[in-house]
Length: 461
Image (cartoon, rainbow, N blue to C red; front, side, top):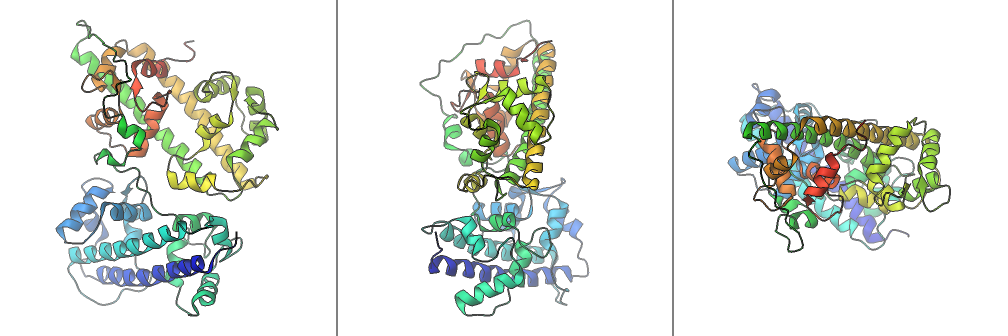
């Protein structure tokens, strides 16, 4: 569908807003970096005492310096420069680095940092509004939007010509180019363009924040359900508190490893979602060879074409986890579980693309990485289950320890609390992924049966 003049006008306005706001932001950066006592590390330590800065810490700093903001804007600011809802020192340096030589203006360091944040939030506010307007336009589609500006990639000259054709103005678009060109290769790829265009959806925050950002299903799990048969678990007097604490600690360490693998897998899912030649239906056809279901033999053959070499044991573990009805065949729905990104904005990009029928070598390489990670993840999970099977002999008591309030089931909030008690601050995406691994019925809570089944090794030997 051809893009309307109104949609093109909004896109041109977006480019101009980014350029103008980025120029103002650079002035604030230059003022800050020109200070005699400017030291990025000291400013970093001003905001945090750990190795990263959270949205909560930035919010506190903004409040102390009377900078207007909303939680969504702070979240977007952090998402623009960092990962997993936080900024490390390198992210912080990129945020502060001016793109031109510093000017000779003096100011207080803390005030200067506040001005940088203020200008960044101004940019976030205006860009987010335009992103939302563009994505809500009739006939909106990301490939068409990209093609209206460039071809295989977008150059600075492409943006300049596009803005001139739509607005009649020859404005400086170099700051917009610098903002979008994340890898600094002098061009904007399709994935970089998508990241710039998609409205930010803060459906997860750092673990110590409100559960209001949880998906509806899991937020409802915080309420007692009239449909849940509460299991009464009697605590054995022979199990000491110390033993229960030790077992719970072992389980939390297993949670930590599962979260780390889930993060790695989600990163690759997102990378695939941004590839213009990848769709899940295409991959399903790749493995199924036109049939309705994918057997282990078909999956193994597909793996070989992707140069993923797996053992029968690894394939068996993968099927036991993702084959929901345990018929030894993977359906389209099972493939969705494996490949669909958990973040809505990436899922939306992936599921609105048209099939391409053919994968590039780069996409095949990414698929190789995803399936190799997936197999390693299931193998590690099975080894963890075996270790816990022989070391935790008081599983009902551990379940009760996590189930705060004696509801008879575990919620996302229970998982958050037990992780935080043991020094782990999960994002809500971490929590949702962890809960999904145990919540096989997709009910929004974890029963004792589901909990014990996930921790039971598939193969004891």
